[in-house]
Image (cartoon, rainbow, N blue to C red):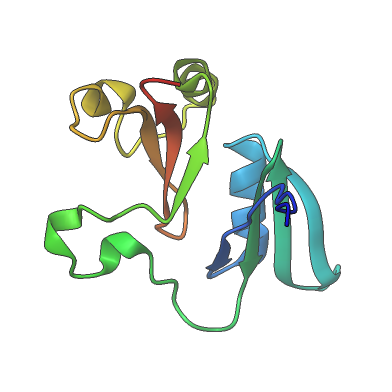
Length: 137
């Protein structure tokens, strides 16, 4: 039997304020808002997309719990999402042009033992996103 193609995945993040989160992802990270609602005066659910990367956000009245807030061996598993980026250097330049604060820069990741090249951003709810690629790709 052949495998059916899967064309994407979307992390589902619990957030404090969907509207603020949507604006951060749109204005700072360049995502398009593809859904917010259910109504204009009651926005507790939202979706953003950039290329094949998509995020889903929902406010359910509890605080977000990003991986970096958990007590896990000195932060070695702090990412909440990995976004595969063919040219992380160019994306870092794009983000820097918006005065976006980096959690870690490309230079800090260059000498890591994981074979990845990229950088980290912490969003407004504390989730850490890694934008990068393997050094061999």
